[in-house]
Amino acid sequence: MDLSILIWIHQHLVFEQLNGFFIFITNLWGDGILTVILTLFLLIKKETRLTGLVIAISLLLNLLIVNLTLKPLVARPRPYTLYEIEMLLPVQADFSFPSGHSSSVFAFVWAYLITRKDRIRWIFLGFALLVCFSRLYLFVHYPTDVLAGIIIGILCALFSRWLVFRFSDTPWMHKLLD
Figure 1 (cartoon, rainbow, N blue to C red):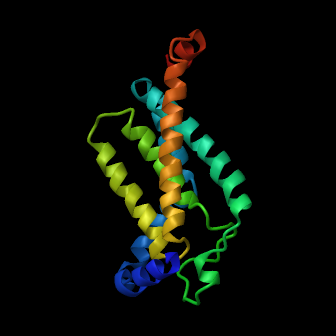
Figure 2: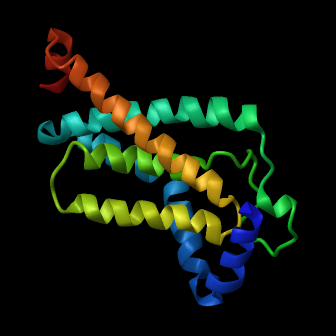
Figure 3: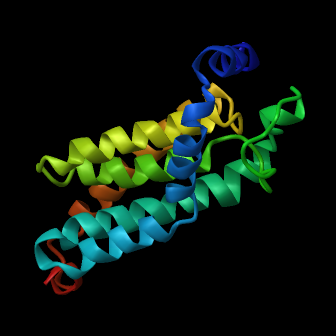
């Protein structure tokens, strides 16, 4: 079923005119540079330091769970290894489940969403959904890889927020946030 949905997406929603856009979106998030810059920016400014801290913890937790634990443990092959298709991206070096792009973008965006109440959070959410769809569009993940990544990212953000707030009354946390 997973492969059938992916093939349907590829046959009905992939257009040559959009290829460059989705390659750009997936690469913009994928190399980690944007993630680091945004997180550092939030950590530097005092009024957004709490958000930056929750995001940093969320991303670290996500890295441990997804890249260092689940991907090697599950070892699910990428969809293009089972279905011949002209790839728009180079062959990926790691496994398919769960989607690291989807989990990390949601670890970032959900942490932002639950700690900030500004309008940019909706732009971030739209961007996160585009990143997730790009992984399907580019045929490098199954829909369940992306869905699991979204869920893991959200859980990492929620746990990170809980963790930061759990220790918010401690002197070392006050020093860290000041």
